[in-house]
Image (spheres, rainbow, N blue to C red):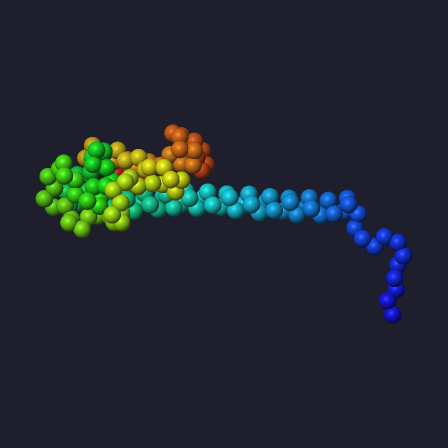
Length: 146
């Protein structure tokens, strides 16, 4: 019923190495695509977070006719600054930070940079490399008042 062949019926070492090389190449490509996708997601998440801050800052401005200063920081969106007279400040705040008093962070764990003199503001993330400038995922992400 079944014929048996005499001789070597297995794979040679070279054939096994070629298969492993092909599998390693496919794995490298898959990991590379996944990491690239992960970094794009971090950029998009940081942009969304910064746009949410922009909305909260606009609400703050409408009530108080000014943006929080650099010294007051983004924490002024969750608790009223003691250093300013803001009779129209929303007692519930403009942004829930979950009771955190520390600064807000981007997707790479670095503090967002907030600068304002009251009439205009800039929020900046330095990107993946956490340095000024850069390209691609290392590029700065900036949101400014209109």
